[in-house]
Amino acid sequence: MSDVKIADNLRERHRRIRGALVVQGTSFDAWCRREGITRQNADKALLGQWNGPTATALVERILAAACFAE
Image 1 (spheres, helix red, strand yellow):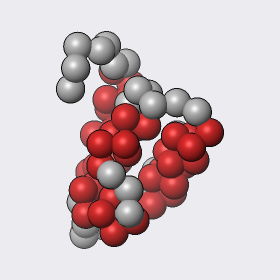
Image 2 (image 1 turned 45 degrees about the vertical axis):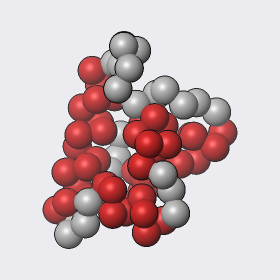
Image 3 (image 1 turned 60 degrees about the vertical axis):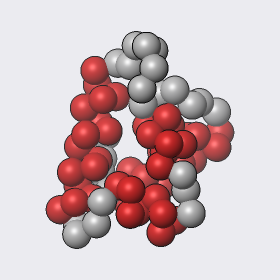
C-alpha cells in the first residue's frame, strides 16, 4: 500500500476478517470475486481509505459475511 498511515485497529480488523473467511472455507479474495467486488475496493473500505455511504455499506456487507461483530 502507499505511505498513508492506517490505524492499527483497522489493520487488525482487516486481518481478523480475512481469518474469519478462511475459517468458513473461503478467502477474502475469493469472497470478493464471488460478490463482484474488487478486492482493492474492499481493502480500502475496510482500512478506512475509502469513505462514504457506498464504502460503509460494503464494510457492513463484509462484516456480515465474515460473521464479525465490532
